Amino acid sequence: MKLDILAIGAHPDDVELGCGATIGKEISLGKKIGILDLTRGELGTRGSAEIRDNEANAAAKLLGVQVRENLGFADGFFINDKKHQLEVVKIIRKYQPEIVLCNAIDDRHIDHPKGSDLVSNACFLSGLMKIETELDGVKQKVWRPKQVYHYIQWKNVEPDFVIDVSGFIDLKLKAVNAYSSQFYNPNSKEPSSPISSKNFIDSIVYRAQDLGRLIGVEHAEGFNSERYIAIKSLDKIF
Image (cartoon, rainbow, N blue to C red; front, side):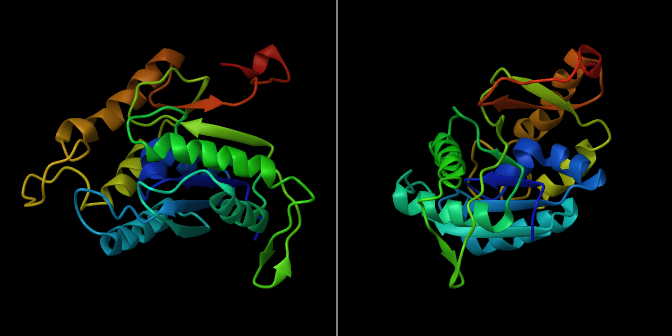
């Protein structure tokens, strides 16, 4: 199956939090989108890997993505080396996405910039002919995505561009809230964490509102680009 967009996150819920509304919008426009989680989030303060597996599947159904896979890398301890790069390369060559969305370049959680670098490197390596990979015993064709974009996470990073996601913030919140073990629940007996507060959930909306305000729309999501943003004509910008 060829995808238009492959969204990759170090942990289940990274993609939903970082670009869930963008995914919802692009799917509504007919794009085929998949999600790849690098780890199962087993070191998370709340819940368990098994719970996160079920929550990730539920979130994927809500968003309407074509496929979701998990590479099972070690949460907190995966590194950007040949072994891990080749596993990501196999997925990129499997789905041949035109665009890859991945973790923030700089962020609070150490896995986020690690995942960002790992995916960026793998996207480049995936296009090299002399790197041979196999999937299910079949030699894969080389493939390099046209663009790699990094969604914004914990840190309030200045975006290189923003996407109008007005009308899709409720879908994003539903997908985020599918991870009920992780986020705000006043009746939970689990230990508190930086993402379990009501303020964190509220921040999803007010960040999108603020980015939307700056471009004159209701809600927006921000991204960083590894390359200059090119446009065909000045009247295509709003």
